[in-house]
Length: 427
Image (cartoon, rainbow, N blue to C red; front, side, top):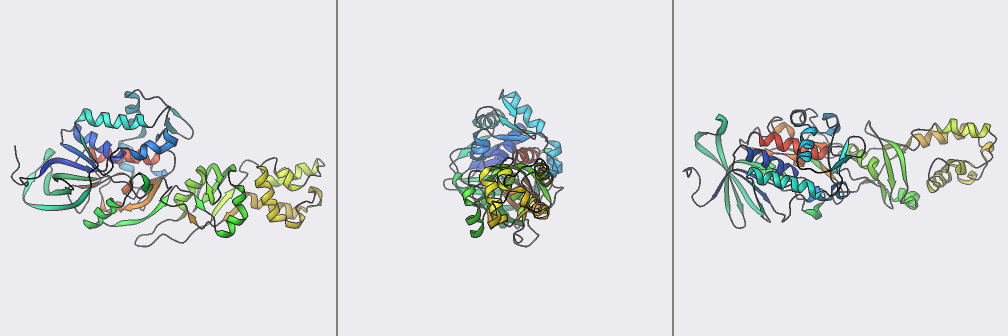
């Protein structure tokens, strides 16, 4: 039956979701399962672009240990509700239901055995089974909201007080519930845009300053001169940034520091404050030998009668090029001195630097390579249970566009699944 409160020339749906990525598809699945007429819109002609390139093409689709402690947000409690109601095991059950082989790599990280395409196929199949439809290659040209004169009881007794109109290049769409699942600004080459933040601003919602995250560090010009020759070296280390510590591999590049350790630390490096820009650059602290007390190790070698140079000994426990460079910088003209000729005080000071190497990077790599976007729609604007705007009934924000950013290792996908599921229960 036609609704007289809707425009006669428009295409009508109960729910429209802008963004057909992981969060958007998860929301569509659960909305459609509730018999809601659900349409997914995306400007891309291909769904799940970020899923397909994640995890080296194998998609680190969740983490068994996902909990609030692995997420950065101005309100660290916001993510608790969704994550507790849709834990990682719930998504694993979907993966197993579809017969997708997977494995745990380390630290609770779950990957497809074969291709990330399996996760995209899973989500598309679930959408199809539930009755959710896709409209791809669709450019949003404008969104408007109309307050209804009559309060209209919606499904489950929910009062609908507004409707949304979405104009694309070739159609006018109307819906009761509008879900923004547009993602962030990271990896623009696969279609990332700032549309979600623009929509939030249009409707008067606050946003937390955005920044690239999980993207590693860049050297200053001086640091590049000192360390660029170490490009390609990987070392197991302990890295500390803004009080948060990670034990992962660190990779030297020609322009900075990458690898899991650097990516994890970059999430905590800038930090954001309400109403302010990203705070000034912070230092990072690197322990290059987290399992060896290096001073004691050198003293043992000295007692054994070793007359090797410090850099030759250090090359036994660190990559040769890295050991050489560190010793050259610290010992300079005395770099060729045999161990017995190096004072214990000098040796101890050098070892202290091996365990507490303080570095202030020039910045992070940026959105082109960032795994995610830190910041986004202010969680104070949203219900933590439903993801609905507190100001605008029927308007929802889910996934990366929200100011909830997880560590590297499947946490951001788990937030996509959980926040999409939460909104899907009520839209």
